[in-house]
Image (cartoon, rainbow, N blue to C red):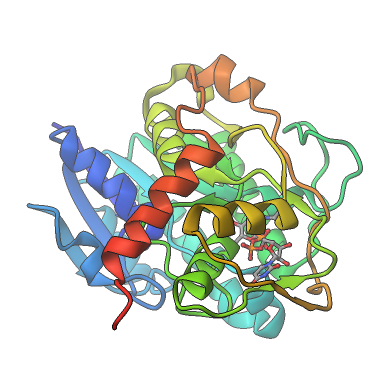
Length: 314
Ligand code: UD1
């Protein structure tokens, strides 16, 4: 049995990875600072070894990777607007901590590190869908930081022979995504607002598009990347491959929830990308990946989860 370290494992995506690994009978360790993650996200899992700590501290990184076979590096401050407000804090979490994890993984003889990259690296490059060979064009500190850490992964593969794979995520959503901050992912914010009878806000004209990806698909892509021999040193998109506008998203959530409110409109957010859609052919070729849960099915499951988790107080 291998030992897997999930950094950021008390967060949204990290906790789904931990859950899938426990389900497969693997040994799992989680390290999380609990800045954006929550212990409750792991409460249903048995036998997970938990370290609370900040990976920007190299000693925490070394303790976390000790004896580990595979690292799934998910820890980050995952927000475009938050990185614009406070670039230093997000740089520390997204770049400094990633370098520490890579150094510690290299020194501990980790077999492979799979990194949570981001579609934001593509910026507003005019061509759709986004292919991994396109040059990066970051529009925010967050996008740049995610890209820098991805480059560090590739350098560590070339310079030190540490196996790494960077998976570029595209607007992941699903159960346990936390709607409690203004920086939260848009789907969680829309569901919570409608659940509580408030009007969600759409930034800009709502015609911007995203490749919204249900979390189960991402978990599948990442777990495949842990083992796929030809994925070493690569950057790979994992997404649904579609494109949904914010206006369409709003109507879908409203219909599924049986709500009637209209959205509020506000100015476009600085650093916002216009359109995002993944080319997923590389993931299919190298990982045998295909999305198994559609946007619509994922949205229905997510709404069901929020309703069960946060019943309306009468
Ligand atoms: C970006 C990245 C994504 C990354 C995420 C981390 C791109 C294409 N995607 O997502 O890879 O994981 O940051 O946070 O860069 N919006 C509203 N109303 C709201 C909230 C958001 O209209 O209340 C809009 C935003 O302006 C944006 C879209 O919804 O156009 C999605 O926003 P969000 O969920 O925050 O993610 P991105 O910024 O696209």
